[in-house]
Picture 1: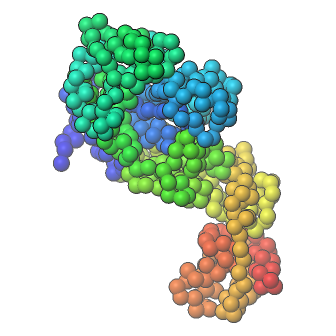
Picture 2: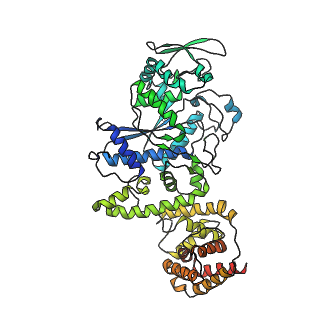
Picture 3: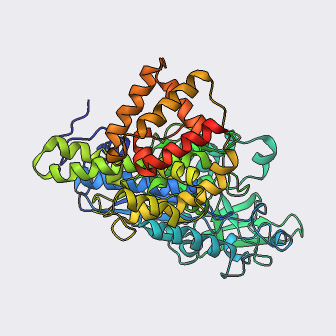
Amino acid sequence: MSDDAHLLIPVPRTWPFEEARKLAEALAGGDPEKPVLFETGYGPSGLPHIGTFGEVARTSWVRQAFTALTGRPARLLAFSDDMDALRKVPDNVPQQDMLKQYIGQPLSRVPDPFGTHESFAAHNNARLCAFLDSFGFEYEFASSTLYYTSGRFDAALRRVLEVHDRILDVILPTLGPDRRATYSPVLPLHPETGEVMQVPMDAIDAAAGTVRWTDPASGKTFETPVTGGHAKMQWKADWAMRWYALGVDYEMSGKDLIDSVRLSGKICRILGGDPPSGLTYELFLDDKGQKISKSKGNGLSVEEWLRYAIPESLGQYMFNQPQRAKRLFFDVIPKATDEYLSHVDKARALQKEAPHDSEARQALLANPAWFIHRGEIPADAGSPVSFAMLLNLASVANAETPDVLWGFIRRYDLTVSPQTHPTLSGLVDRAVVYYADFVRPAKTWRTPDDKERAALTDLAAALRGQETQARDADALQNLVFEIGKRHGFDPLRAWFTCLYEVLLGQSEGPRFGGFIALYGVTETIALIDAALAR
């Protein structure tokens, strides 16, 4: 058990705080006034995807926990490897033939196929920043090209030449024979073509800060300074050099990079630095169980998620169990959305109690909504109606526009409007779109059997006497339970499955008493009658 006496608060039992505690232990004894540097990396060879967002979000949450735990200042650097070479043309961008002409060029020198920015890297960097800004992340954006060309890395690059052979001793045993013969941690930029060259070095001059190499195509020999953006590092050595040059304290990475983290850590120590602490997170999988990829464009994009759900739901999805592989496809959206709504309701209550109740304070800090809302739950966050309920309401009402759903909602509660409940407004808009694209095409109603028909007839008859309790969701739920028990459904889940499959055309559904209260008793009776007549 570690000694937590140096921490400002007890450590809440949630993964960002556990990561923060590990980092605090690693930095114990250092300068408490020096800002702690968190970093995330982005390869702009393809459009940003949700995995990219997830790394920034999760790192931000560890940073938030670290500050709460220690009181120390911290920065987050979102670093783009935009000086990397274009190795292949992504499948999901225009002007494929044009891009093929720039294979091997730094991404920051490849024209933008969308025609909106000065380079392909600049376009993708802008896409990344636009989303991070819209979500409210606090970060500093950094460009590899700018850091190399401005001289920010010059001292570290000279240090690389001083320990060049020791770096080779670490990397070469991990390579196959062919790659080993051509490998160099230094990648000079061709002075005539601009191409990032992957060739062996003929000579290293650490004192002069240069490398000599031969172009295999022309046979010409060049001497290139490693400083000033005339060369860059091979990526594992580049990662280590960046940690060393910037003093990175924390960086997480995917499970597929475990070996790279280990090698880069060794190189960082050879350079004279300490590798950062970090979390290894599991990968996201698409609907076929394949790893999502920027170049393939499989899985979900950020824009697609936000078409169907509010941004906070994406945060909730990323918060859950980062060390477990998860499917990232459209069908995860409703669950993530309603998990967020549940957590934000609890967090709002805890936020009122936290100032004078230490247990409530601990529970609040362990709540995902505390992280998603950066420590302060807005008064208008949350929704009186779940996303699942809205989807079911859209389904039975065949809602083509948000106004259809708002008609039911206002009848249920006259005090609710898009102005008073902005989160609900966002949910309503997206529920209509999600219903049209995913729910409606998949709906199939089944015919009830004799036992189910009798129970449904009984439910309709009982509801005809419940008009005065039309808005009492609990009373209506109890009524539904009583009908199911009366007709011998065991387990009672079978009764609710009947309601969902026969009335709603799906295998799962909402708390049915709440659904009746929102949809309307009279309308629910008509729904049952229509199902019995089918």
